[in-house]
Amino acid sequence: QVQLVESGGGLVQPGGSLRLSCAASGFTFSSSYMSWVRQAPGKGPEWVSSMNTESGARRYADSVKGRFTISRDNAKNTLYLQMNSLKPEDTALYYCARGTSWDNRDYWGQGTQVTVSS
Image (cartoon, rainbow, N blue to C red):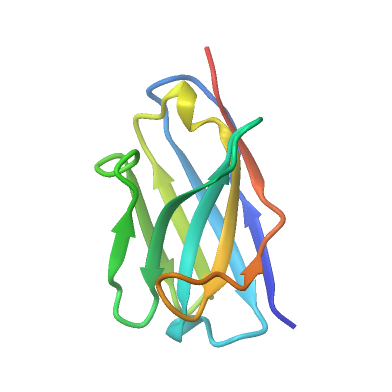
């Protein structure tokens, strides 16, 4: 069955960096659409970034463009999110999700918490 397991979250000071990982199994990772979605306390989900793991095409939300980079290692079935210049408003639970197109997400991981605070 499809499994997505996120890791790499934690507490970081403003301006700092973190790299999230999402280990995938149970489907053909190298020909999927993979996304990062976050949810801050008391707010709805916010799409962060997506990637076509076959072509390498990427998309980003305006709120993270220039600061976050999505990447993948198809040999390791792993998705990454490099987050630089972190801000307190980036604090959220970050989910990895799989989809079959840019606009759908049918499987989700359990999330990893990112807290940006001094």
